[in-house]
Image (cartoon, rainbow, N blue to C red; front, side):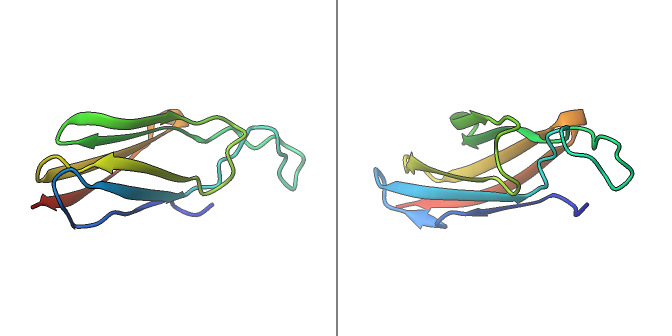
Length: 108
């Protein structure tokens, strides 16, 4: 299994009031718990079950993910630029693993 690798694509600057796109992708196999390995044993469930984006501490996007989501979940959403600050992204996995990224946004 490959290590989970989160990535985001977001502009570094925007005009006040502008709506911009945030694109996020995490490399993750999203094991449902229904597949079997070569020995016929069930592979334990391990999925990204939650994604949250905070803009200067305020939640601007949150999603709960389930078994039906494909491997390497891609999430795209829109945010309105209000003030300069940070966007914090958090992916939570079954079993307690948490993956985070942060990006800065300059608003003019």
